[in-house]
Image (cartoon, rainbow, N blue to C red; front, side, top):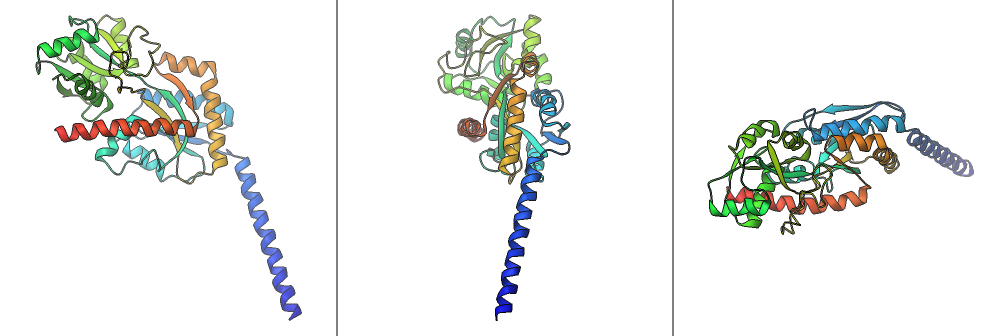
Length: 328
């Protein structure tokens, strides 16, 4: 009996030692992170706001983490494909993804397959805002938002607005603008900003909510005029353009935030390392300058803070999307 107890006790000690070694190895592996290149999935085509922001930030993250950071574009199904790939990736910290909060919230109303940013992924950090502006053709008599609304009320149903696509943030911003002001303007959807721009410049469409980065060259060329911004504060590119809130639409705020996420199950210690690398990148003067030159607003937000923004944007844009869907 004594021998049996000793054997059991010996086995227990060996198990404890093995468990301790395993825990130590796991801790070492996490402390050594990263030991190989990382990848950031962008669920959008190259050259847009999402792609530009990710590449600028990734360059500085390489310095902080001491490893290459590769950007991989995986567009399709309004960002659903890229985010699904992210959600199924190994939760080891070596795969991240960028998400547009408003865009993902809107898509979720009609597509249950898109991961929910509130619960299905691990937030790493808010990174940038890509604010939209209300742009009109320069030949339009209306010189400000009040005159534009007066024109719409005088000629209901006569004028058109352009968007980046049916169900896009650009589309729903115009629907919200119409609803809050009680005006009748017809929708002409395009497949992207670049295809919508010629019609807006020529006056085929009267107005469009589009990114400041896309609109700025046309404003400088004297082809478009900016009457306001959807951001919660006036933006650097167009400091004279009032916010929608300043124009009396108190519920209309659309900063268009983007954030980095990791797959579900990513260890907290690794997530913290990634958050710190993103924060360092967004504090670097060269990163700030590059993002601002691209028409983007650097805006680091820690995970808990960023998720409050996510919750608020989901509530707003899902509501607008459901209302628009019912009205069709």
